[in-house]
Amino acid sequence: MTRNLSRFNSLRIVSLMLALLISASAISCGSTSDRNADTSADVQTSAPEVTTDGDPRKNAKDDLPELDYNGETIRVLSRGGDYDTSIEFNVDEESGDVVSDAVYNRNVMVEERLNLKIENIVTEKTRHNYNSDMIRQSVLAGSDDYDIIADALHSTMSLVLENMFFDLNKLDYIDPSQPWWNQSLSELSMITDGLYAITGQLSLTSISGVFCMFYNSDLFAEISNDDIYQVVKDGKWTIDKLHEYCANSYRDLNGDTKTDQDDFYGLYVRDRQTLASDAFLGGARISAVETDGDGYKLSVINERTVEYAEKLKSLIYDSQATCRGEYNDDTIMHKMNDSSTVFLPWMLGAINDLREMEDNFGIIPIPKLNEEQSTYSSYTHNGSSVFAIPMTCKSPDRSAAFLEAMCAESYRSVVPAYYETAIKVKYSRDEPTAQMLDLIIDNICLDVAYLYSTYLGEYVDIFRNMFIDAENCENIVSRLTSKESSMNVKLGEIVEKYKELN
Image (cartoon, rainbow, N blue to C red; front, side):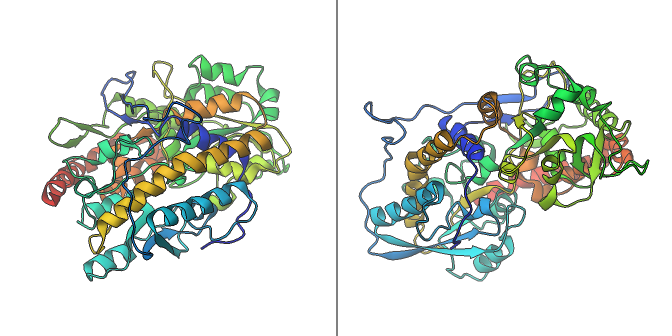
């Protein structure tokens, strides 16, 4: 287990609180060939059944019966290579930090309730890495090594297709309709009646991994008189609007008369296969796949994608609006900290890197493709944790009871701790940020191609490569067209593999 966890930044805690207060509902993206059409279909979750007195979240009831597992050990394979992955399970003592103590007390409460002992098997994998090789080797060898898998979404969904996990719908105790589970992921991943992986409020990485736009509010005031929060509220925050703000912002800070990453730019991104691509793709609601009820087919080759590519090329390559820095995820927030960029798209968890930032900053959604797009939207990083029970587990119903208890207790006790921290510490730099976070979290967008990106491969890479050079932007449709046939074959294989699992 991980010790001496650093203090959890309160603004990220606000985001968690907001996300969890809306019952982890999400939007599953649809698809259309209309360039100005909204490509989403709302997936709503019902309100939880709770007692009428006191705190409704604290008093939310699960349907688990009294269970006693006689002090048995339940083994959880999880990641612990960074703070976000570690905080989900791996706290082995109280430290006085309200967040890590809440996780620790949740673990103890579930251990006592079920009379079992949690053994955390922690690898040094981060959000960007995964344990799929370990999982595959264990299951194929028939080894009963793990009772619970907590691993990256995209790699786990690929393992589902390899028949690595139990169908959770055939086990006792897990109720996917409860508010602590994310019903949207369940609906997207269940091509048939089987449910082989699940996520919910136990997965804090699914919230800290939401893509958003950080901006330096002090520097923004130097380039525009606009109230950017009002621009967002008016539905006018688009890629074109971002370009308008950034177009004339360049300054040669080091005086070498060359445009390099040491200068000042309106927008800062990475230069290759960057997650900024995932951020802009989700914000523009570029959905890859449509379904006819029986299967999937690629539907991204359309005018909307052409418009997206044209706007990105103009923003990134046709002016000095954007800096494409060296590929290094660990230092990307330095450009915000040293006040040499106005805008920077990244995951919400990066707020933890801005605690000492001298300038004021805020958080807004990723811009829309155009004003005709009806809502803002955002992907959550596909390295966020989902949960599954390996086929070699000897007590799958016990594992199911453990997952239900852990996720329900996260809903009841961990989130209130986050909220109290957010209210008491108040790291937020301005009041409207909380409203923006609500808007971002309330419009999380899920896409089938992003969900199964490890299996499909080329799709995500084609869009990420748009940040390598202008040619990849110009040729996006031809690149997608060249892969259309093979992608449709793989989409068909996904459906067939699900059918074989039942």
